[in-house]
Length: 194
Image (tube, rainbow, N blue to C red):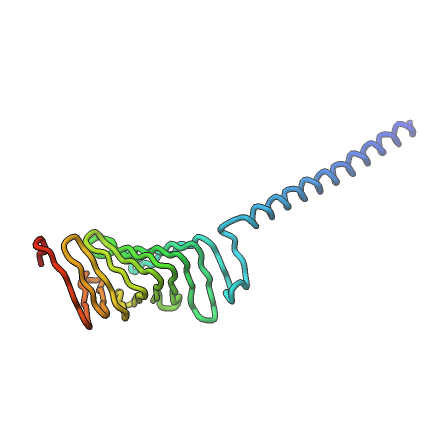
């Protein structure tokens, strides 16, 4: 009987040791596969890269005021710097929502969002468009408290029946009115109406 008990204990020991090694092996394989997937992921979160506290890929942010969406931003990547209260976005696409339910779309190479005020600086191949016009410039600013987009550098605006160039401009998103300043030149076709 003691002989059978020893065989049973040895088999149980062997089974338990095998189970431990099998569990360890499976855990190791899962860990290595998970790590491999994270290294190739576009949405990898890393800390301490490019002087940023946090760097992420494929960012999305929305700003609302009084329950109403004011703008939403999508970007290929974002670097957040806590000390500067800012996030730097690359390859950004921005949508402003107006009161009349129309939208203004902005694309650019980069943008800086001041996280304490929601003010932005957008630069590099900036294109602003809605259903009626397209504006191009190299640098654009957004003041969140006043909901104003403005440029201090020359802008080129085109529409179906006009082309306009100005040294600077501002667009009030509350009333959808634009102001052009400096040397303003324009070409209008016969179909243009005010």
